[in-house]
Amino acid sequence: MAIGPRLDLRQSQSLVMTPQLQQAIKLLQLSNLELQDYVEQELKENPLLEADSSTVTEAGEVRAEGIDEIASDAKPDAEPLPETTDTAETLARAAETGENVDAGQSMDSDVDNDWSSDTPGDAVAPAPESQAYESYGSGGGGGGGAGGGGDDLPGLEQTLASEETMREHLLTELGFLVCTAGDRLIGAHLIDMLDEAGYLQGSLEGLAVRLGCDIEDIEAVLGVLQTVEPTGLFARDLAQCLGLQLKERGRLDPIMQIFLENLDLLAKRDLPGLIKVCGVDEEDIQDMVTEIRELDPKPGRLFNHEIAQPMIPDVMMRAKPDGGWAIELNSETLPKVLVNNTYYAEIKGGAMSKDDRRYIQDCLQTANWLVKSLHQRATTILKVATEIVSQQDAFFREGVSALKPLVLRDVADVIEMHESTVSRVTSNKYMATPRGIFELKYFFTSSVGGSAGGDGHSSESVRQRIKILINEEEPKKVLSDDKIVKLLKAEGMDVARRTVAKYRDSLGLASSVQRRREKTSKI
Image 1 (cartoon, one colour):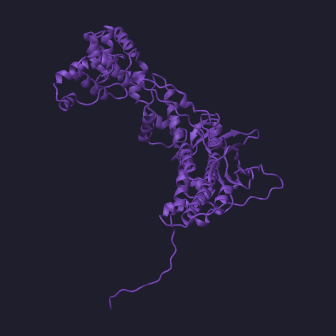
Image 2: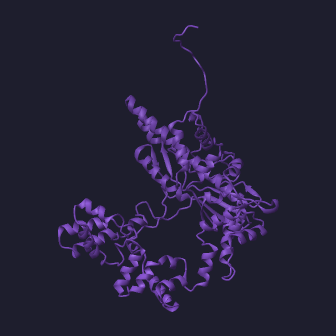
Image 3: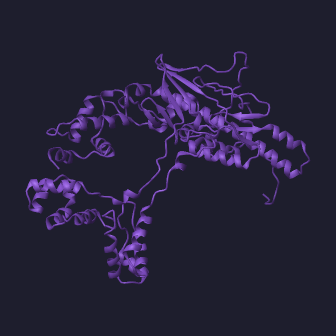
Protein backbone atom coordinates (compact mmCIF):
# COMPACT_ATOMS: atom_id res chain seq x y z
CA MET A 1 0.00 0.00 0.00
CA ALA A 2 1.46 3.33 -1.06
CA ILE A 3 1.96 6.02 1.55
CA GLY A 4 1.16 9.54 0.49
CA PRO A 5 -0.94 12.63 1.26
CA ARG A 6 -4.59 12.71 0.29
CA LEU A 7 -7.64 14.94 0.81
CA ASP A 8 -10.79 13.48 2.45
CA LEU A 9 -14.21 15.09 2.94
CA ARG A 10 -16.17 13.96 6.01
CA GLN A 11 -19.51 14.93 7.49
CA SER A 12 -20.17 14.80 11.24
CA GLN A 13 -22.29 16.36 13.96
CA SER A 14 -20.89 18.02 17.06
CA LEU A 15 -21.86 20.42 19.82
CA VAL A 16 -20.13 23.78 19.93
CA MET A 17 -19.89 25.72 23.20
CA THR A 18 -20.45 29.20 21.83
CA PRO A 19 -19.72 32.30 23.92
CA GLN A 20 -23.47 32.82 24.26
CA LEU A 21 -23.91 29.36 25.74
CA GLN A 22 -21.06 29.94 28.15
CA GLN A 23 -22.69 33.20 29.20
CA ALA A 24 -26.04 31.51 29.85
CA ILE A 25 -24.40 28.79 31.94
CA LYS A 26 -22.60 31.45 33.94
CA LEU A 27 -25.81 33.40 34.58
CA LEU A 28 -27.58 30.27 35.78
CA GLN A 29 -25.23 29.74 38.70
CA LEU A 30 -24.65 33.37 39.72
CA SER A 31 -26.08 34.62 43.01
CA ASN A 32 -28.39 37.64 42.93
CA LEU A 33 -25.58 40.00 43.99
CA GLU A 34 -23.21 38.61 41.36
CA LEU A 35 -25.96 38.87 38.77
CA GLN A 36 -26.51 42.55 39.62
CA ASP A 37 -22.80 43.26 39.12
CA TYR A 38 -22.75 41.36 35.84
CA VAL A 39 -25.78 43.18 34.41
CA GLU A 40 -24.44 46.57 35.51
CA GLN A 41 -21.22 45.84 33.64
CA GLU A 42 -23.18 44.88 30.52
CA LEU A 43 -25.20 48.10 30.77
CA LYS A 44 -21.95 50.07 30.71
CA GLU A 45 -20.49 48.23 27.73
CA ASN A 46 -23.54 47.77 25.49
CA PRO A 47 -25.15 50.99 24.15
CA LEU A 48 -28.35 49.12 23.19
CA LEU A 49 -29.06 47.97 26.75
CA GLU A 50 -30.93 50.15 29.22
CA ALA A 51 -32.22 49.74 32.76
CA ASP A 52 -35.95 50.04 33.37
CA SER A 53 -38.02 50.63 36.51
CA SER A 54 -41.27 48.93 35.49
CA THR A 55 -42.33 45.91 37.54
CA VAL A 56 -43.07 42.43 36.34
CA THR A 57 -43.95 39.73 38.86
CA GLU A 58 -44.06 36.00 38.59
CA ALA A 59 -45.81 33.56 40.93
CA GLY A 60 -46.25 29.87 41.42
CA GLU A 61 -48.57 27.89 43.69
CA VAL A 62 -48.13 24.49 45.25
CA ARG A 63 -50.83 22.46 46.96
CA ALA A 64 -50.37 19.48 49.21
CA GLU A 65 -51.33 17.07 46.46
CA GLY A 66 -49.08 18.61 43.81
CA ILE A 67 -48.49 21.65 41.66
CA ASP A 68 -51.40 23.64 40.31
CA GLU A 69 -51.41 25.84 37.26
CA ILE A 70 -50.91 29.50 37.95
CA ALA A 71 -53.43 32.05 36.83
CA SER A 72 -52.07 34.54 34.36
CA ASP A 73 -52.34 38.28 34.80
CA ALA A 74 -52.64 38.72 31.05
CA LYS A 75 -55.68 40.37 29.54
CA PRO A 76 -58.60 38.07 28.65
CA ASP A 77 -58.24 38.80 24.96
CA ALA A 78 -54.48 38.47 24.91
CA GLU A 79 -52.98 35.97 22.51
CA PRO A 80 -51.53 32.79 24.04
CA LEU A 81 -47.84 33.05 24.82
CA PRO A 82 -45.44 30.84 22.90
CA GLU A 83 -43.44 28.19 24.72
CA THR A 84 -39.74 28.66 25.18
CA THR A 85 -36.98 26.22 24.43
CA ASP A 86 -35.38 24.89 27.60
CA THR A 87 -31.99 26.43 27.06
CA ALA A 88 -30.87 25.65 30.59
CA GLU A 89 -31.24 21.95 29.79
CA THR A 90 -29.25 22.34 26.57
CA LEU A 91 -26.52 24.15 28.45
CA ALA A 92 -26.37 21.53 31.15
CA ARG A 93 -26.04 18.68 28.67
CA ALA A 94 -23.30 20.51 26.80
CA ALA A 95 -21.40 21.16 30.00
CA GLU A 96 -21.81 17.55 31.17
CA THR A 97 -20.84 15.80 27.93
CA GLY A 98 -18.15 18.23 26.85
CA GLU A 99 -19.68 18.30 23.40
CA ASN A 100 -20.27 21.36 21.28
CA VAL A 101 -23.59 22.88 20.41
CA ASP A 102 -24.60 25.67 18.13
CA ALA A 103 -27.18 27.52 20.17
CA GLY A 104 -28.16 29.86 17.43
CA GLN A 105 -31.64 28.32 17.22
CA SER A 106 -32.11 27.34 20.89
CA MET A 107 -33.52 30.62 22.14
CA ASP A 108 -35.30 32.11 19.17
CA SER A 109 -38.76 32.10 20.73
CA ASP A 110 -40.23 35.44 21.62
CA VAL A 111 -39.89 35.68 25.40
CA ASP A 112 -39.24 39.37 25.62
CA ASN A 113 -42.81 40.27 26.52
CA ASP A 114 -44.09 37.12 28.23
CA TRP A 115 -43.46 34.68 31.04
CA SER A 116 -44.28 31.17 29.89
CA SER A 117 -43.24 27.70 30.97
CA ASP A 118 -43.51 24.12 29.83
CA THR A 119 -44.64 22.83 33.23
CA PRO A 120 -47.52 23.80 35.53
CA GLY A 121 -46.60 25.91 38.52
CA ASP A 122 -45.08 28.82 36.65
CA ALA A 123 -46.77 32.18 36.43
CA VAL A 124 -47.37 34.24 33.35
CA ALA A 125 -47.20 37.99 33.67
CA PRO A 126 -46.70 39.93 30.44
CA ALA A 127 -44.42 42.91 30.43
CA PRO A 128 -45.73 46.27 29.23
CA GLU A 129 -45.90 46.21 25.44
CA SER A 130 -43.77 48.69 23.61
CA GLN A 131 -42.63 49.03 20.03
CA ALA A 132 -39.46 50.72 21.15
CA TYR A 133 -38.22 48.18 23.70
CA GLU A 134 -37.86 44.47 24.23
CA SER A 135 -37.66 43.77 27.94
CA TYR A 136 -36.90 41.21 30.60
CA GLY A 137 -38.92 41.83 33.75
CA SER A 138 -38.31 42.36 37.39
CA GLY A 139 -38.83 45.28 39.69
CA GLY A 140 -37.09 48.12 41.31
CA GLY A 141 -35.03 49.42 38.43
CA GLY A 142 -31.98 47.27 38.63
CA GLY A 143 -32.79 45.50 41.84
CA GLY A 144 -32.49 47.72 44.82
CA GLY A 145 -31.55 45.01 47.39
CA ALA A 146 -31.30 46.23 50.92
CA GLY A 147 -31.26 49.92 50.14
CA GLY A 148 -34.96 49.98 49.45
CA GLY A 149 -34.91 53.56 48.18
CA GLY A 150 -34.78 55.33 44.84
CA ASP A 151 -31.88 55.06 42.43
CA ASP A 152 -30.47 58.42 43.58
CA LEU A 153 -30.37 57.43 47.25
CA PRO A 154 -27.22 55.81 48.69
CA GLY A 155 -27.34 52.26 49.99
CA LEU A 156 -27.33 51.54 53.71
CA GLU A 157 -23.71 50.43 53.67
CA GLN A 158 -22.71 53.79 52.14
CA THR A 159 -24.18 55.76 55.04
CA LEU A 160 -22.14 54.04 57.77
CA ALA A 161 -19.39 56.03 59.48
CA SER A 162 -15.84 54.69 59.20
CA GLU A 163 -14.45 53.04 62.31
CA GLU A 164 -10.88 53.09 63.61
CA THR A 165 -9.08 49.85 62.89
CA MET A 166 -6.90 48.03 65.40
CA ARG A 167 -3.78 48.87 63.41
CA GLU A 168 -4.64 52.58 63.27
CA HIS A 169 -5.33 52.63 67.01
CA LEU A 170 -2.06 50.88 67.86
CA LEU A 171 0.04 53.03 65.55
CA THR A 172 -1.35 56.10 67.29
CA GLU A 173 -0.54 54.64 70.70
CA LEU A 174 2.92 53.65 69.48
CA GLY A 175 3.75 57.30 68.79
CA PHE A 176 3.08 58.15 72.45
CA LEU A 177 4.78 55.13 74.02
CA VAL A 178 8.18 55.04 72.27
CA CYS A 179 10.53 57.84 71.36
CA THR A 180 13.25 56.54 69.06
CA ALA A 181 12.79 55.80 65.37
CA GLY A 182 14.24 52.30 65.80
CA ASP A 183 11.71 51.36 68.47
CA ARG A 184 8.89 52.72 66.35
CA LEU A 185 10.04 50.57 63.44
CA ILE A 186 10.07 47.49 65.69
CA GLY A 187 6.65 48.41 67.08
CA ALA A 188 5.18 48.81 63.59
CA HIS A 189 6.37 45.33 62.65
CA LEU A 190 4.96 43.87 65.86
CA ILE A 191 1.60 45.48 65.10
CA ASP A 192 1.60 43.89 61.67
CA MET A 193 2.16 40.50 63.31
CA LEU A 194 -1.18 40.62 65.16
CA ASP A 195 -4.13 38.49 64.07
CA GLU A 196 -7.78 39.58 64.23
CA ALA A 197 -8.10 38.43 67.85
CA GLY A 198 -5.10 40.53 68.92
CA TYR A 199 -2.64 37.64 69.37
CA LEU A 200 0.97 37.92 68.24
CA GLN A 201 1.83 35.55 65.42
CA GLY A 202 5.27 34.69 64.12
CA SER A 203 8.73 34.43 65.63
CA LEU A 204 10.48 37.25 67.47
CA GLU A 205 13.82 35.71 66.52
CA GLY A 206 12.88 35.88 62.86
CA LEU A 207 11.88 39.53 63.25
CA ALA A 208 15.23 40.28 64.91
CA VAL A 209 17.03 38.76 61.93
CA ARG A 210 14.96 40.75 59.43
CA LEU A 211 15.50 44.06 61.24
CA GLY A 212 19.11 43.36 62.18
CA CYS A 213 18.59 44.15 65.88
CA ASP A 214 18.91 42.33 69.19
CA ILE A 215 16.06 40.17 70.48
CA GLU A 216 16.24 42.13 73.76
CA ASP A 217 15.26 45.31 71.92
CA ILE A 218 12.22 43.61 70.41
CA GLU A 219 11.15 42.16 73.76
CA ALA A 220 11.49 45.59 75.37
CA VAL A 221 9.19 47.20 72.78
CA LEU A 222 6.80 44.26 73.06
CA GLY A 223 6.58 44.76 76.82
CA VAL A 224 5.63 48.40 76.26
CA LEU A 225 2.98 47.53 73.67
CA GLN A 226 1.41 44.97 76.01
CA THR A 227 0.32 47.86 78.23
CA VAL A 228 -1.94 49.47 75.62
CA GLU A 229 -5.71 49.37 75.79
CA PRO A 230 -7.53 47.07 75.47
CA THR A 231 -5.35 45.01 77.77
CA GLY A 232 -4.48 41.57 76.46
CA LEU A 233 -3.19 42.56 73.04
CA PHE A 234 0.20 41.22 71.87
CA ALA A 235 -0.18 38.00 73.89
CA ARG A 236 1.22 34.78 72.45
CA ASP A 237 -1.57 32.53 73.75
CA LEU A 238 -4.78 32.56 75.79
CA ALA A 239 -3.04 32.10 79.13
CA GLN A 240 -0.80 35.12 78.55
CA CYS A 241 -3.74 37.20 77.31
CA LEU A 242 -5.71 36.50 80.47
CA GLY A 243 -2.57 36.98 82.58
CA LEU A 244 -2.03 40.49 81.19
CA GLN A 245 -5.58 41.45 82.15
CA LEU A 246 -5.24 39.93 85.63
CA LYS A 247 -1.93 41.71 86.09
CA GLU A 248 -3.58 45.03 85.33
CA ARG A 249 -6.18 44.26 88.02
CA GLY A 250 -3.51 43.22 90.53
CA ARG A 251 -4.80 39.63 90.66
CA LEU A 252 -1.95 37.70 89.04
CA ASP A 253 -0.68 35.87 92.13
CA PRO A 254 1.21 32.53 92.02
CA ILE A 255 -1.94 30.45 92.50
CA MET A 256 -3.70 32.25 89.66
CA GLN A 257 -0.61 31.71 87.49
CA ILE A 258 -0.84 27.96 88.15
CA PHE A 259 -4.54 28.13 87.28
CA LEU A 260 -3.74 29.79 83.94
CA GLU A 261 -1.16 27.14 83.15
CA ASN A 262 -3.86 24.47 83.51
CA LEU A 263 -6.69 26.01 81.48
CA ASP A 264 -7.11 22.67 79.72
CA LEU A 265 -8.54 21.27 82.95
CA LEU A 266 -11.03 24.12 83.05
CA ALA A 267 -12.10 23.33 79.48
CA LYS A 268 -12.71 19.72 80.51
CA ARG A 269 -14.67 20.82 83.61
CA ASP A 270 -12.19 18.80 85.69
CA LEU A 271 -12.86 20.46 89.04
CA PRO A 272 -10.98 17.90 91.18
CA GLY A 273 -7.92 18.26 88.94
CA LEU A 274 -7.89 22.05 89.32
CA ILE A 275 -8.26 21.80 93.10
CA LYS A 276 -5.35 19.39 93.23
CA VAL A 277 -2.87 21.37 91.08
CA CYS A 278 -3.76 24.75 92.62
CA GLY A 279 -3.81 23.51 96.20
CA VAL A 280 -7.01 25.38 97.12
CA ASP A 281 -10.52 24.37 98.09
CA GLU A 282 -13.61 24.25 95.88
CA GLU A 283 -14.84 27.70 96.92
CA ASP A 284 -11.57 29.34 95.89
CA ILE A 285 -11.68 27.57 92.54
CA GLN A 286 -15.22 28.84 91.96
CA ASP A 287 -14.10 32.41 92.67
CA MET A 288 -11.14 32.07 90.28
CA VAL A 289 -13.38 30.70 87.52
CA THR A 290 -15.81 33.60 88.01
CA GLU A 291 -12.95 36.06 87.72
CA ILE A 292 -11.60 34.40 84.58
CA ARG A 293 -14.99 34.56 82.90
CA GLU A 294 -15.08 38.33 83.36
CA LEU A 295 -12.00 38.70 81.11
CA ASP A 296 -11.92 39.10 77.32
CA PRO A 297 -10.18 36.16 75.61
CA LYS A 298 -10.05 38.00 72.25
CA PRO A 299 -9.46 41.73 72.86
CA GLY A 300 -8.84 42.37 69.16
CA ARG A 301 -12.51 41.76 68.40
CA LEU A 302 -13.31 45.23 69.74
CA PHE A 303 -11.94 46.62 66.46
CA ASN A 304 -13.77 44.26 64.13
CA HIS A 305 -16.39 46.45 62.49
CA GLU A 306 -17.64 44.19 59.73
CA ILE A 307 -20.74 45.38 57.91
CA ALA A 308 -23.43 42.74 58.04
CA GLN A 309 -24.51 41.97 54.50
CA PRO A 310 -28.28 41.38 54.27
CA MET A 311 -29.35 38.05 52.80
CA ILE A 312 -31.82 38.72 50.01
CA PRO A 313 -33.89 35.66 49.07
CA ASP A 314 -34.34 34.80 45.41
CA VAL A 315 -37.70 33.10 45.95
CA MET A 316 -40.58 34.12 48.21
CA MET A 317 -42.97 31.56 49.67
CA ARG A 318 -46.17 32.10 51.66
CA ALA A 319 -49.11 30.03 52.87
CA LYS A 320 -52.43 30.30 51.01
CA PRO A 321 -55.81 30.41 52.75
CA ASP A 322 -56.84 27.14 51.10
CA GLY A 323 -53.89 25.25 52.59
CA GLY A 324 -51.48 25.35 49.64
CA TRP A 325 -48.33 27.37 49.06
CA ALA A 326 -47.82 30.41 46.84
CA ILE A 327 -44.34 30.81 45.35
CA GLU A 328 -42.99 33.79 43.48
CA LEU A 329 -39.66 35.19 42.45
CA ASN A 330 -38.30 38.11 44.43
CA SER A 331 -38.50 41.01 41.99
CA GLU A 332 -35.68 42.83 43.77
CA THR A 333 -33.20 40.16 42.73
CA LEU A 334 -34.19 40.25 39.04
CA PRO A 335 -32.47 43.04 37.12
CA LYS A 336 -34.63 44.82 34.56
CA VAL A 337 -32.94 45.32 31.21
CA LEU A 338 -34.36 46.65 27.94
CA VAL A 339 -33.18 46.43 24.35
CA ASN A 340 -33.56 49.84 22.73
CA ASN A 341 -34.73 48.92 19.23
CA THR A 342 -35.55 52.53 18.36
CA TYR A 343 -31.97 53.62 18.92
CA TYR A 344 -30.75 50.63 16.92
CA ALA A 345 -33.00 51.55 13.99
CA GLU A 346 -31.81 55.16 14.07
CA ILE A 347 -28.10 54.44 13.98
CA LYS A 348 -28.49 51.57 11.53
CA GLY A 349 -30.13 53.89 9.02
CA GLY A 350 -27.22 56.32 9.13
CA ALA A 351 -24.01 56.18 7.15
CA MET A 352 -21.66 53.74 8.86
CA SER A 353 -18.52 51.91 8.00
CA LYS A 354 -18.35 48.13 7.78
CA ASP A 355 -16.74 47.86 11.21
CA ASP A 356 -19.43 50.10 12.74
CA ARG A 357 -22.21 47.96 11.31
CA ARG A 358 -20.54 44.81 12.60
CA TYR A 359 -20.14 46.36 16.05
CA ILE A 360 -23.75 47.51 16.36
CA GLN A 361 -25.00 44.14 15.08
CA ASP A 362 -22.91 42.34 17.72
CA CYS A 363 -24.30 44.66 20.39
CA LEU A 364 -27.86 43.85 19.33
CA GLN A 365 -27.19 40.12 19.31
CA THR A 366 -25.55 40.28 22.73
CA ALA A 367 -28.38 42.36 24.18
CA ASN A 368 -31.08 40.02 22.88
CA TRP A 369 -29.24 36.99 24.19
CA LEU A 370 -28.82 38.57 27.62
CA VAL A 371 -32.55 39.34 27.81
CA LYS A 372 -33.47 35.79 26.92
CA SER A 373 -30.83 34.26 29.21
CA LEU A 374 -32.14 36.26 32.14
CA HIS A 375 -35.66 35.14 31.34
CA GLN A 376 -34.64 31.50 31.14
CA ARG A 377 -32.69 31.78 34.40
CA ALA A 378 -35.72 33.17 36.22
CA THR A 379 -38.14 30.55 34.93
CA THR A 380 -35.71 27.73 35.74
CA ILE A 381 -35.23 28.96 39.32
CA LEU A 382 -39.00 29.08 39.78
CA LYS A 383 -39.43 25.58 38.37
CA VAL A 384 -36.84 24.12 40.72
CA ALA A 385 -38.10 26.02 43.78
CA THR A 386 -41.69 24.99 43.08
CA GLU A 387 -40.78 21.33 42.86
CA ILE A 388 -38.68 21.53 46.05
CA VAL A 389 -41.66 22.95 47.94
CA SER A 390 -43.86 20.20 46.54
CA GLN A 391 -41.38 17.50 47.60
CA GLN A 392 -40.73 18.97 51.06
CA ASP A 393 -44.31 19.96 51.90
CA ALA A 394 -44.14 18.10 55.24
CA PHE A 395 -41.08 20.11 56.31
CA PHE A 396 -42.88 23.43 55.90
CA ARG A 397 -45.84 22.15 57.90
CA GLU A 398 -44.13 20.15 60.68
CA GLY A 399 -40.49 21.25 60.85
CA VAL A 400 -37.04 19.68 60.47
CA SER A 401 -38.18 16.33 61.84
CA ALA A 402 -40.35 15.89 58.73
CA LEU A 403 -37.60 16.75 56.23
CA LYS A 404 -37.49 13.89 53.72
CA PRO A 405 -34.43 12.59 51.86
CA LEU A 406 -34.03 14.37 48.54
CA VAL A 407 -31.38 14.27 45.84
CA LEU A 408 -30.92 16.33 42.70
CA ARG A 409 -32.22 13.54 40.50
CA ASP A 410 -35.61 13.53 42.25
CA VAL A 411 -36.21 17.14 41.21
CA ALA A 412 -34.50 16.85 37.82
CA ASP A 413 -36.70 13.91 36.74
CA VAL A 414 -39.94 15.76 37.54
CA ILE A 415 -39.07 19.03 35.82
CA GLU A 416 -37.31 17.16 32.97
CA MET A 417 -33.95 18.83 33.33
CA HIS A 418 -30.45 17.56 33.90
CA GLU A 419 -29.07 17.14 37.42
CA SER A 420 -26.28 19.60 36.69
CA THR A 421 -28.90 22.23 35.83
CA VAL A 422 -30.61 21.73 39.20
CA SER A 423 -27.23 21.89 40.92
CA ARG A 424 -26.39 25.21 39.29
CA VAL A 425 -29.82 26.66 40.07
CA THR A 426 -29.65 25.74 43.76
CA SER A 427 -26.14 27.13 44.29
CA ASN A 428 -26.15 30.43 46.21
CA LYS A 429 -29.94 30.79 45.85
CA TYR A 430 -32.14 31.36 48.89
CA MET A 431 -35.85 30.98 49.57
CA ALA A 432 -37.84 32.91 52.20
CA THR A 433 -40.32 30.53 53.84
CA PRO A 434 -42.63 30.71 56.88
CA ARG A 435 -39.88 28.83 58.76
CA GLY A 436 -37.09 31.20 57.80
CA ILE A 437 -34.67 31.78 54.93
CA PHE A 438 -32.98 28.65 53.60
CA GLU A 439 -30.51 27.99 50.83
CA LEU A 440 -32.11 25.81 48.17
CA LYS A 441 -29.38 23.21 48.69
CA TYR A 442 -30.50 22.83 52.31
CA PHE A 443 -33.48 20.77 51.18
CA PHE A 444 -31.25 18.15 49.52
CA THR A 445 -30.14 15.67 52.17
CA SER A 446 -28.89 12.10 52.09
CA SER A 447 -31.02 9.22 53.28
CA VAL A 448 -30.57 7.28 56.52
CA GLY A 449 -32.08 3.82 56.37
CA GLY A 450 -35.13 2.93 58.39
CA SER A 451 -35.12 0.05 60.85
CA ALA A 452 -37.07 -3.13 60.07
CA GLY A 453 -37.24 -2.19 56.38
CA GLY A 454 -39.07 1.07 57.00
CA ASP A 455 -38.83 4.25 54.97
CA GLY A 456 -35.58 6.19 54.99
CA HIS A 457 -35.06 9.36 56.98
CA SER A 458 -33.31 12.59 56.09
CA SER A 459 -29.85 12.93 57.61
CA GLU A 460 -30.81 16.45 58.73
CA SER A 461 -33.86 15.17 60.60
CA VAL A 462 -31.72 12.47 62.29
CA ARG A 463 -29.19 15.11 63.30
CA GLN A 464 -31.98 17.25 64.74
CA ARG A 465 -33.36 14.28 66.68
CA ILE A 466 -29.92 13.59 68.19
CA LYS A 467 -29.71 17.21 69.29
CA ILE A 468 -33.13 17.02 70.97
CA LEU A 469 -32.25 13.80 72.79
CA ILE A 470 -29.03 15.25 74.17
CA ASN A 471 -30.61 18.55 75.18
CA GLU A 472 -33.37 16.74 77.07
CA GLU A 473 -31.15 14.22 78.85
CA GLU A 474 -30.99 14.31 82.65
CA PRO A 475 -27.68 15.20 84.38
CA LYS A 476 -27.64 11.83 86.15
CA LYS A 477 -28.61 9.88 83.03
CA VAL A 478 -26.34 11.22 80.29
CA LEU A 479 -26.88 9.33 77.04
CA SER A 480 -23.93 7.54 75.50
CA ASP A 481 -23.64 7.17 71.74
CA ASP A 482 -24.69 3.51 72.03
CA LYS A 483 -27.78 4.48 73.98
CA ILE A 484 -28.68 7.11 71.37
CA VAL A 485 -28.37 4.44 68.67
CA LYS A 486 -30.89 2.26 70.52
CA LEU A 487 -33.31 5.15 71.01
CA LEU A 488 -33.14 6.09 67.33
CA LYS A 489 -33.65 2.50 66.26
CA ALA A 490 -36.76 2.33 68.45
CA GLU A 491 -38.05 5.36 66.51
CA GLY A 492 -37.40 3.67 63.15
CA MET A 493 -33.98 5.17 62.37
CA ASP A 494 -31.23 2.64 61.63
CA VAL A 495 -28.07 4.62 62.45
CA ALA A 496 -24.60 3.29 63.22
CA ARG A 497 -22.72 4.42 66.31
CA ARG A 498 -19.98 6.13 64.28
CA THR A 499 -22.70 8.05 62.40
CA VAL A 500 -24.15 9.26 65.70
CA ALA A 501 -20.70 10.39 66.81
CA LYS A 502 -20.16 12.20 63.50
CA TYR A 503 -23.51 14.00 63.68
CA ARG A 504 -22.91 14.89 67.35
CA ASP A 505 -19.52 16.41 66.52
CA SER A 506 -21.03 18.40 63.62
CA LEU A 507 -23.56 19.86 66.08
CA GLY A 508 -20.76 20.94 68.44
CA LEU A 509 -21.95 18.58 71.20
CA ALA A 510 -19.41 17.01 73.54
CA SER A 511 -19.06 13.33 74.33
CA SER A 512 -21.09 11.70 77.09
CA VAL A 513 -18.12 11.83 79.49
CA GLN A 514 -17.60 15.54 78.89
CA ARG A 515 -21.32 16.31 79.14
CA ARG A 516 -21.56 14.43 82.43
CA ARG A 517 -18.77 16.60 83.85
CA GLU A 518 -20.42 19.77 82.59
CA LYS A 519 -23.83 18.92 84.02
CA THR A 520 -22.56 17.78 87.41
CA SER A 521 -19.92 20.47 87.83
CA LYS A 522 -20.67 23.97 89.07
CA ILE A 523 -18.01 25.65 86.91
